[in-house]
Length: 188
Image (cartoon, rainbow, N blue to C red; front, side, top):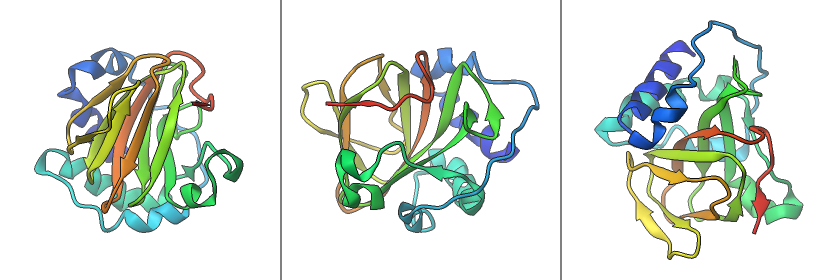
């Protein structure tokens, strides 16, 4: 886990929008036990490919994927069973991850090919950093725009946003701060 946390922090260190989040990065060695869990979307992890700038962090996610606690925020009634087969996340730092923090949450989001993560919003401010795959991202009422690996996406508190994958799976690191770090997003 230490190598993964170091790689994640290094990946975000080059992202100006992440500076305030990194100021709250937990320094203590406190750890909690999390029970590994898998989801159908995890079948895509091993086949992910990255750019050189995010290869180290992707390699750590791939190495630890079977020991991470993969979760879902939604149920079938929210977006349907097809969405759930292609969606999941694992928290490294936060209220549920192995590194406790009440100030930030940090982890990785996975979306399988052909998944639309519908418009949603949340109180937490958020920065995403794609580490593998290509996806289109939407902010507020703007059109979907393709975002490349290593290109950060910032969502201020309550900014509506959505994501779409086409023929590639997506892995994106995330940072959250502010609001309830365990809150379910509001579906729009």
